[in-house]
Amino acid sequence: MMLKSLLSVGEVAQRSGVAVSALHFYERKGLIQSLRTGGNQRRYERSVLRRVAVIQAAQSVGLSLEDIGLAMAGLPRDSAPTAEDWERMSQAWRQALDARIDRLIRLRDGLESCIGCGCLSTQTCPLRNPGDRHGRSGGTGSEVLGGPD
Ligand code: FES
Image 1 (tube, rainbow, N blue to C red):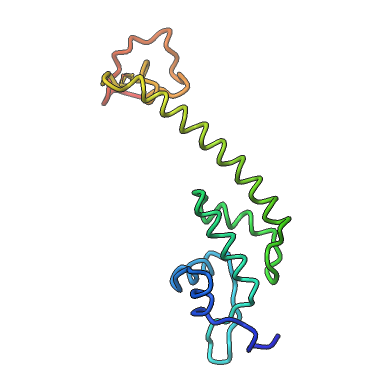
Image 2: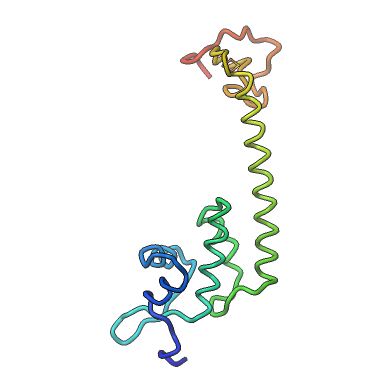
């Protein structure tokens, strides 16, 4: 590989719009990789730009770098993610987002019954007893904030 065809970290930052410090962080997390020149400077293959674009897109929908790293772990390190790779990853992320949205909706709906209440009961408050894990049949509803869980 000709070093001249590789990109410096500054060039990657400029073309991707991602800060140099973030690129270093991605590299420490194993999401991207660089080669080193004889002077120990980082150089990146051009395919890194598409990897960074995938990372940015995934982060924009709230995925953690750990989730992104897991999804990208199966990709070849020396080539850009293909459209098929992106299709597969984005489908999986969509399912994860749907599950997160469902959970947030349940939390929001639980909060509705708390507004104006303030009981914070470990038996009847859906935020203190999500999914009714303590069961409501035998409880008095008097186990309030600070009480045993
Ligand atoms: S504070 Fe949640 S139901 Fe009363």
